[in-house]
Length: 182
Image 1 (tube, rainbow, N blue to C red):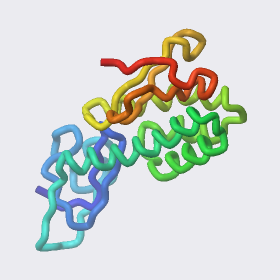
Image 2 (tube, helix red, strand yellow):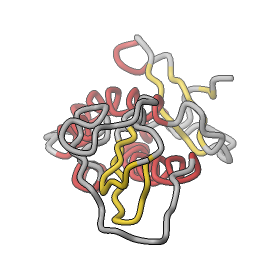
Image 3 (cartoon, rainbow, N blue to C red):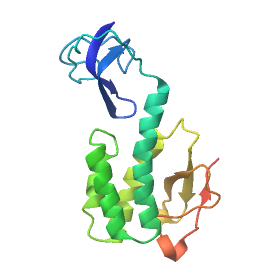
């Protein structure tokens, strides 16, 4: 076991940092080298010596993925409410706060959208990345609208506690069009 300062969780596209962490294995199950490269190309450096240790649990990863998904949900909610300004702001915050997440590129593009139609088109890619992150979470469920994306259909995430769909692809025009996937 080697002390390291940065531990990458590649499956979620997140990075956790602490000076008092011990890594038992890298994100792919291999023990990362003590310096350059790590098991997934992340730089790792020895941490300061410390007598206390912590281990990363799956709860930590779930907690941080939920934080990312809350940012995603702010974008979805703004699009549902036909509020381009709020959607762009939420997307910019998501891209800035979670630069290394798989959603960052789409979030940045959405934050620069000129129209709500463009934002909704980009939202499809953002949703695909979010759905992958939420795959094992019980706090989120996938909704689907068959008419989104030129009748190709579109999926998005909503909180598991939601009882009806809030369609971000059409907003007020068809606010509750769609259904939850099983």
